[in-house]
Image (cartoon, rainbow, N blue to C red; front, top):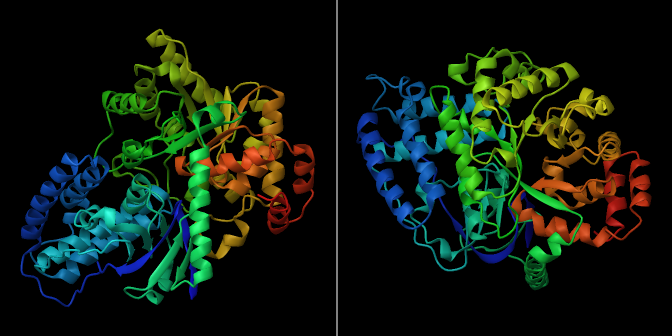
Length: 543
């Protein structure tokens, strides 16, 4: 038996036979079609698949293929292909690869996914130019093993035969992950070169929570996997509306793409704790109108009947949007981004605020500003909301800030006088406190939100907010991790925004410690010197 680790992104366990799905391209095969002919052929194929997806209520996959068609029409891409290279598969793919690398360098989850989409479209175009077609004959209980998976790939698969998915690459919002979560299929991404260890037909067991993959597992491991599967099913079944509503917890969800919105389906979690509005502005060639933004928000309001925390535009130097003419910056993470950009481009900001305020159910929307580091920035932003609300003769919604900069944590007492709520973005906050780029794999050991430096900062923010009766929540990845969420609960947090698939598991852990001496747990973890000690201390609680 061989064990490898990846990132678990769709909770569940499974056992099956490996099916190696080859979707790599061979640039040595000559083209049979020109680039333009391939675009026409592939567009027709995608349109047929979109029609089939929609007829089978697979709208999120149809939306992705719609986006693929737009990529094939994008001037930024096709302008790099001319008469001299439109029959060279190597040259054509290089254009897609170069554009993907630019997006990948921006170190943002959304742009990483767009980079994956560009490469996927490029691969499909190369296969089409070469006249290569593929069909997939799966057997029951298959574990798909692939570099990545696109809607065009999964459209040819019988998904009911798939027990699990393992990907060499992929982001948490990639198409394959969305599909896996939709269908309840355990999924592990990011296993890198260790994917080459897995051979076709190998017996495989996977755990989509821990990210553990066992190749040719022994009887003992199979028994443990089956027991874990049963336990996970029991945890999910035990997370009922009655027990949730009887608790002191409020769970909200994070969404930031059409795929996540379309695929969301939960019987009683109905609020958004972090709505990332960036996708409204991306993948287009002009600024969205007020009416277009309003329509998107109203569609979300139909799907979510509770609170919607709407984060205003959070883009900047690391996220280039051609029509915004953003400056190139040496250090974009410390540059003109988030609210700083909005205050520089006030017309853009005012249009976004107006689209929120004229939406039908604005009374359920809270407005949140990102990258706030000074009181002055908040007051100026809040005044803009107030002015537009007065002009529209409506009540101003609750307005709050993301806590993600060290200065905002140090000024938390002062901010409490002005804001209606705080939402802590632990991903960026950890990055800034530890002075460690969270996209740099060489700095992983510094990027742990359970480090005492981060926990002591969080304790000050949470206790100050609670003392002043200002709502405080966490919308970073800490909320989706049971151990980290337990630390937050001990620090006094009660509002968590997370991935919906994590909710039963986080709830089970918090329910387990709710009657313990939380002050003692808090004092113990805050007195420690490193994140390893914190984890060990939390594990003593039988978490």
